Length: 357
Image (cartoon, rainbow, N blue to C red):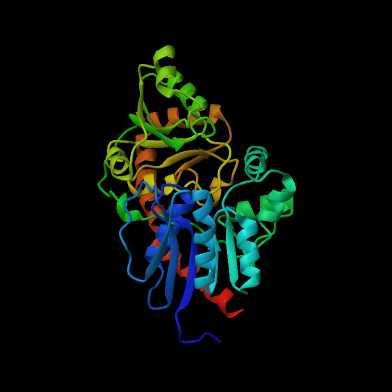
């Protein structure tokens, strides 16, 4: 049975540093019910987010050098908590040792599809395939963030996660724009870091074949690609590179965008599709990583298999603006279903179950 005391939970991320897992920890820290939970988490001396203290949340500031302070920070969080959450595989052997020694409960999430690209990146980070598998088997419970990831990673790599899916949410209010601004297809946007992996070359090919439309790219090539140089060299007169933009800049930009395209073949659950949806901008995606699980094709977004089908879909939307308008309206409803204020209940329930087990 659950006691009356608050459950102490450690969120193993840096809530003042931009990164998908870190931002998830920040959102969870904000939304957990502070009447039931005391939260511990980390900040980083070089963080790029102006973190403001949250009532009921204690932080450990990892100092310079980080290669030393991260060990102290994770140990501090594990020592303080009843339940520890690890969204990343960072120093997993160290964390596993202290979890076992201090007899703490722990859980983790698997947030990416371990296809050829995903497993290659994971091996580069961990050192070997065996270490990749081991890094997912250190915790009391492992959750996938989509049903598709659960099935794929179990069948491909025997990585077994809980039947319950822990979906990741987004803070809808930061992007919510319910004014009916999408009338006809004119402005298209691609967003993402690691633009090569995100499929920027497919995006540029679409732009080349659709000269009457305006294409925008926001994000970074992480030093692997100079997007502006390619645009200049290839004379893409209908493509504008915005560079890296912050959340407020993205929110404002979306008010003038009609369609979001993410031509990536390897994702987990790209939350950018929810952020754009909250602004009434539906997404056009590839099906490879199970996007049909949260997007209903031609209802609140578009899911296709090939580049040719992406181009066909865009042409169809040009000719049928009412379909684009319908998907724009329904996209807002999609985003609202994935607001953190709703999804946090599932997270609280699973934390409670683990604590009481």
